[in-house]
Structure formats: C-alpha cells, structure tokens
Image (spheres, rainbow, N blue to C red):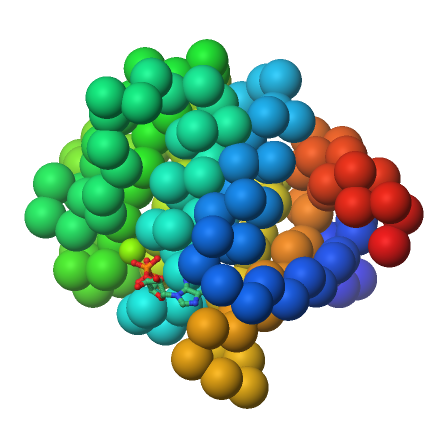
Length: 170
Ligand SMILES: Nc1ncnc2c1ncn2[C@@H]1O[C@H](COP(=O)(O)OP(=O)(O)O)[C@@H](O)[C@H]1O
Ligand SMILES: [Mg+2]
C-alpha cells in the first residue's frame, strides 16, 4: 500500500501586477477568514510574502497603528487582529535547527490563530497538514507575481472558494 498522497483539494493561480494587488489579495483572504488557519507562504526573497501578510492583517481588522514587518530576527510576531494573527518567518533557520517544540512554534501552529508562515517549505510535512499553501513566483517584469494557491483540508478549501467566487467565478 502506498501512503495517501498529500494532494490539494483545489488549486488556483492568480497573477498580480503590483504590490498593491498582492496586498489586496491578502486583505480579501483576511476578510473571508472566520476561523483559524495556517497560510504556508513559499517563494524567493522579494516575491511578495510579507506584502501579502500586510494585506492579510488589514483584512483581519488589525488597527492601523500596527505596522506589519517580517519577523526575520524575532521569528514570530503576534498581532491583536479580529482573529489572533501570528506571522512567522523561517528564513534564518536551517531545517535541521527547526525544533518546533523548543521554538514555541508547535503550540502556535496548533493553537487556534491565523498563522502566516514565510519560508514554510522548511516546516516538516506534519506540522501543518491543513493549510492554504501559496507559492509566490516572479513574473515577466519587475512588478508581476504569480500566486499559486493550493488548499489542503476543508478550512483552506472554503477560503479558496470564497476568493474564487468574489473574483466573479473566474
Ligand atoms: N506584484 C507584486 N506583488 C508583491 N510585491 C511586489 C509586486 N511588485 C513589486 N513588488 C515589490 O516586491 C517586494 C516584495 O517584498 P516582500 O513582500 O518583503 O517579499 P518577501 O517577503 O517574499 O521576501 C516589495 O518591495 C514590493 O514592493
Ligand atoms: Mg518576507
């Protein structure tokens, strides 16, 4: 018997033409979210992961006096949004250093907030079986990005369906 493959329930690719557009997609995700979810963000430096999380925070009604920057050195930032928002950045960690328990990340990943993880490919596969995975890639010119979204698990599927229907079924 082969183990069940970890296949997404649905996938969608969006193209954005400017940082503001990527931020707006993040904001729509935030507005649609009614329950905790892990967002696994994957993509090279400068591909737009942090810009996306800035929009996500606004969509979760984070008060405007809070600014959202990458927790590259702090590893995790926590924000008092409509749902508690955790922003994790694994950039500086080698996968071998990644003791989720010791770093306090296991608790966060299981713990009932919206958890946006940059460099999520460093997470062990079991760390977030249910997640919306978003792969950010550079497009044809400096301000084009593609966001490929893969929904693993029902909560992520609901969010992706919401995004698609808001986009007019396209
Ligand atoms: N379509 C786009 N989407 C997101 N960011 C863009 C886009 N076009 C240009 N940019 C720029 O790319 C950079 C993305 O930075 P950032 O979100 O910090 O990347 P990452 O967190 O993936 O390293 C920003 O300077 C942003 O202004
Ligand atoms: Mg970043």
